[in-house]
Image (tube, rainbow, N blue to C red; front, side, top):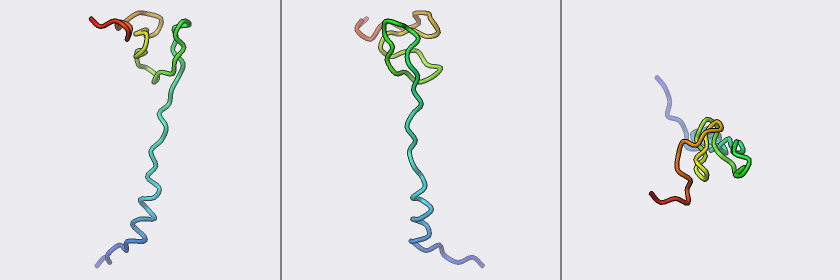
Length: 61
C-alpha cells in the first residue's frame, strides 16, 4: 500500500517545473535582424530562409 505524498514533498517536486526562456535567433533579413523563433517566419518582416513568405507586419491587407 502506498502512502499519501506530503504537501512538502509534492511542493518540492513541483518547484522544479520552471518555464524555460524561448530560444530565439536573429532574423535572416539583414534589414530586420530582430529576434525570431527558429524555423519560423519573422513576424516583423515576413522573411523565412531568405524568401518573403508573409506580408510585413506594417501592411494591413
